Image (cartoon, rainbow, N blue to C red; front, side, top):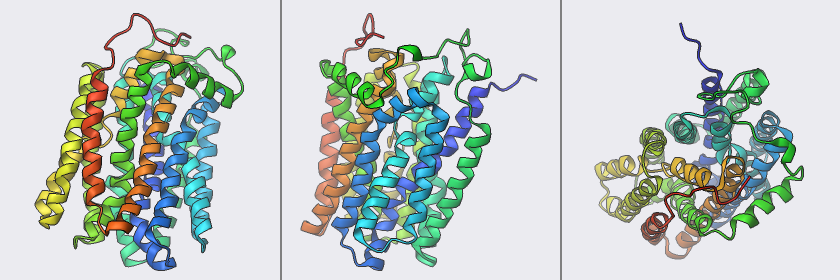
Length: 421
């Protein structure tokens, strides 16, 4: 019997860890109304804290990528999951809005950053030579799997018991995750004396650590300034800004509340997000497979176009109060939720090189989270002003159509990477 390569075991471990980090982040949408009811906080204040979380985890991404190169992957995973555990435990005792901002804005934002930004390309680059696109697709899809399995459970606990019961459940999962990382996580194939999957030697995917700037801030900033002079960076970052705005920022934070405003039950709305997770698991994994085989620019073009159309049509489903139309939206949108990640990672790797692509992607991901933060806070502000989210969702759809035009003008191939090692 052929032995399973340890790269696939690492992939499974990371899949589970990203599920847990993802459900911690995405549970914010379920907690908006409970926090509003329990504490009397207005929705724009709650949206600000959740928007800050999105902003911090996005802006922290490139620095997390630099820190991994300096102090090690396993240590950073343990520190990040430990930070999430502290945030979850502290949530059980918060009573003031500034508690909410510190816990959900800063601790949970910073703790989730590694898992939800640069961990996927780090694992793909370090542990795989073949099937890198598939590895990124699988790990990216794991955030959707968290929604699939746990969001309805969290919504049910909130409805039948309390939001604190949901926090305890997620806290238990984070404890299990950190134990798995302690006992089974390995730093790299080289540390085990094996080659990465599909590699011909132990060193085939190792970065040249002796050449790395040991200051993580300086390293991340210097890579960013190098990237500034290339339009490809701006096109990828701009399209990813729209990606974040139209997914975790708007749908992840406000979709449940938007549905409730049209008479749908919270559990039904959360189940729709879960249903999106089912199809995103399929769509993003398939996107990873496709990104190894087809022009990544055209993949992104169709992903943004289809997402834009679905967001523009969503208000029609809600105004008609049609469960069937909402279900069709969940399927259509779910297939495309974060399918943009594998081709974006591949384009960044091809343009900027293996060694620097993780930090470059961290900055591109930061743009994603700036967009998410704008939508999370902006969606709440629009609701406060107009008592509806409709204009926010239609506006996001139009921006997605614009993003589809941005990605298609990226140059297809380069004789060598733009930023040399």
